[in-house]
Length: 85
Image (cartoon, rainbow, N blue to C red; front, side):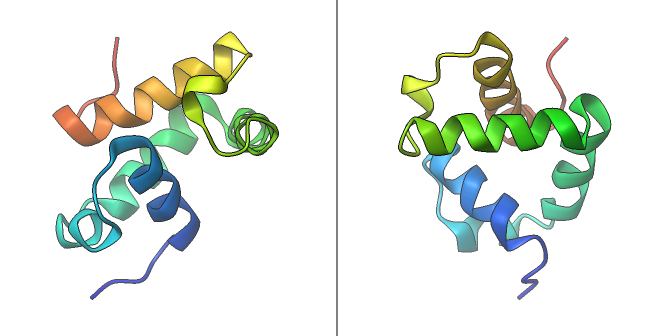
């Protein structure tokens, strides 16, 4: 099984409530990882991860609107296969 992008898989599992193995089995890890970076950029993803750490890993406790939007977008991407408009 593909073990690429373990941090993104762990983050996605936390946000979606799906298991890491289920996400890996979809075959979409690399595509969704790359889509996230392309849509928001590495710097914004870094800030999002810092914000999530500050919220003790709880996406519902994110204070920053941009970070909340990134969290919602990643969930939407996994649910629908498309970045939200």
